[in-house]
Image 1: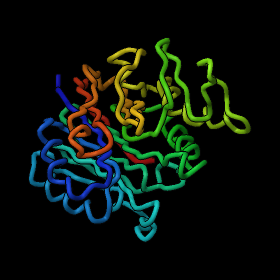
Image 2: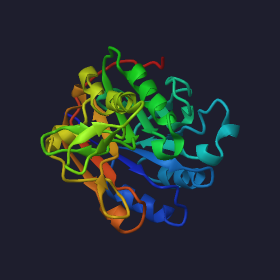
Image 3: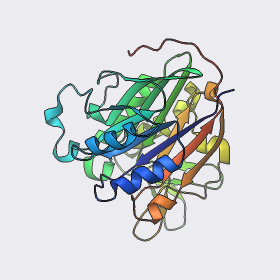
Image 4: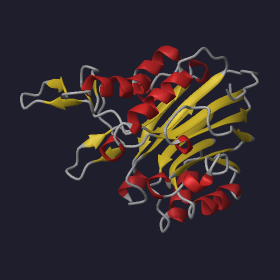
Length: 282
């Protein structure tokens, strides 16, 4: 049985803390990493530091972009995936989402066989409106299909809004009343909730359950991002196929509390079964 550690982290586009971020990340001893909020200026530095480490196989959404000239302004953030083993980035466009650079897909040739690996940074609805929902729909459409072999989706999803002690999950198309109950927001609230739910909950029916909930239960008391008033949100997720056999999953808070990012990294350990499958981009 092969042991494997995956770390996903929104590094907040920070440049002055980049070397510290890389050192802390490498110290976690990952086999695969996924980074969000990479910029044109930080990508070469990340690539240099990773290629000098044992996680030396690197691909980025910038290098597979069909048109890199659009990667400015609100679209300046891209993704990096790196691994100890050979990695092949798939051409941009496998997902029908508004900002295609916000999904990076790759095949990783691990000792347990090929892994179809996707990382994403879902645009926040507070600043980009329905692009968030169209992004979620695009992810669900692409991944809610039969597949063989290992498959993993991770990243910053800016969802959900809240997870209750009874396991109920609430999304941003809902509001909480003063008495503590929840109700859909007026207008297209139910449609908004359905879009977020399609990824956060509904992919479980397509062999992509939430690994953190799988390992730690439905009662959530840990978070990856906090509001200014200290309210926690669990925005960062790993969804993985049953064949990857997760054994543990937790949020690594030290990087956030040390000011390296405003997000905590999510770490998951796996013992994948051998799966000799040739993966091909759609």
